[in-house]
Image 1 (cartoon, helix red, strand yellow):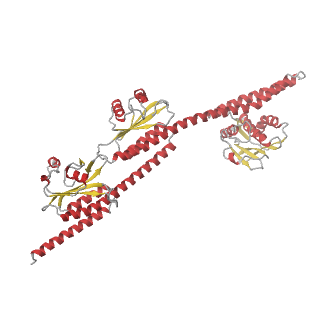
Image 2 (spheres, rainbow, N blue to C red):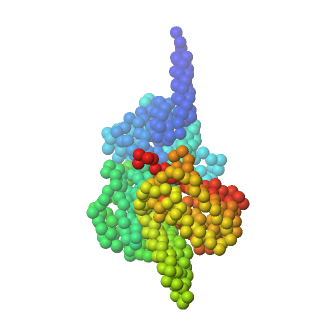
Amino acid sequence: MPTRKQSELKARLQQKEREIFSIQRIGQALSSTLHLDDLLGVIMKEITHLMDADRSTLYLVDRRKNEIWSKIALKAEVKEIRQRIGVGISGYVAASGEKINIPDAYKDSRFDPSTDKRTGYRTRSILCLPVWEPTTNQQKREILGVIQVLNKREGHFTTEDEGILEAVASEVAIAISNARLYEQLEQKLKEIDLLYELEQQLSSIYNLSDLLQNFLHGLMKHLGCNASALIFPENNQPRLLWVEKERGSVQPEISSTQLEFLETLSPDGPECDPKAVLKSINELLGSHFSFLKIIPLPSGQEKYRQALILVQWPATDNVNSDIENSQILDIIGQKIIRAIELFSLRVQLFRQERLSAVGQMMGTIVHDLRSPINSINGFLELMTEPDATPEERHEYAQIMRTEIQSIMNMITEILDFSKGKTSILPRKTSATDVLKRFQPQIEQLFRNSGISLKIENKSKKLLYADVEKLTRVFYNISKNAKEALKNSGNFQFTVYDTDSEVVFELKDDGPGIPDEIRGRLFDSFVTSGKESGTGLGLAIVKKIVEEHHGHIELSTAKGQGTTFFIKLPELKKEE
């Protein structure tokens, strides 16, 4: 039969075992998760068990709002408790940093019974102590929170309970600090992800409204807000974009004229009070946006010098979200500024490129028209010579008529090329017919040039082709060869057959095509080594050959000349 002392020792041993087990469980909880809400729920449950209490609450301190608040209140109807620092027992501990052990709460003047009245709960004994920031500098450490334990099941809280809870509080402080650091890291990673997503969109979406609409969707996804909107200048007029969580993109029935009051606002002016502006916008839109971010725009905006981000938060009292959300809105704001700048630069660049393209096209037309016009002018002078015979004048007139027709054909081709039209008029013909039409032009081109010209026709097959357009192809290539040869060298034009094609081979022994333009040779406006050419000639060549269902190949090497192969399908007998 155990003695009374043995029974007391056994009971104390069992109590110590329970305490050690609870402390072990708290230690396991501290190392199991870095998410603060999950962590605190487990810890407060174990503290309640360890203290043999009715319930426990951990209040976190918010210095910015001068409040303590808790999401954890075990066995209570109140899921979230808020109170001012200095009010009530826990508020007093948060303000003073003192430890308080009260055997009878209603006999202490610092106790606030309002929560008991609201919930029907009866508070008896209280043990409340601060959770200090874990730091080696005891002079500058701050209170992170307050642990409050209520109603010891038997008697009241002892000095031993105080010591145990202080030891646990130091571990809780480390857990809170680590959890907050983890949350900050998570937030930064989310910001990096958001920045990456926004940068990807900046480089891939060229429509400003679509880009900013995507920004709003990203903002809502990141912040979890119910609605977001953006008012920004587009074409020197205010534009409203609006996105809602449930309905997606919204098109409000509101005109830019109704938003023109924004023109009077200056981002740093006294009339630009965010609360007043937000109120005016909500009244105008019939909306319930709860936050306004004003973004000063870069210089260069004529009338509207700011963009406005509007946000409607969900119904939550998460006091920690304000700072984080403000930082995200700053990031979004900077990206909006960059998007507007990029859009403005792209518009300017597009205008410059369009003007440059027009100039290049005009240069090409002038360059291509110069030769036939010079020819017409020369023969016109010959016609006026007193000793010119009627037969010679007739011949000159025929040549001039041909050159004028050539000019008209070139103008038509350039216009068709610029509009992307297919303009060939093919008919049944042969390589002999093509050469008959082209030979006078190529002989005239190389006459008195110092370049040796050789023409050879080995083809026996028929073609379905536009002879005038093919003549244009051969003339462009031959003219380029003449300019490359610089009045010395050899040019050879050979036509021959393969199994299913007629091949026109145009070969020179000039310097070859430079490496830097070889891969872009048939693009528009690519040229090299010409005084006035712009490179549209070979682009026209490629287009005409493709319209004939043929293809063009190139062989060139530095110092070894260039050969073009124009390969056109033969006309089958049944065709």
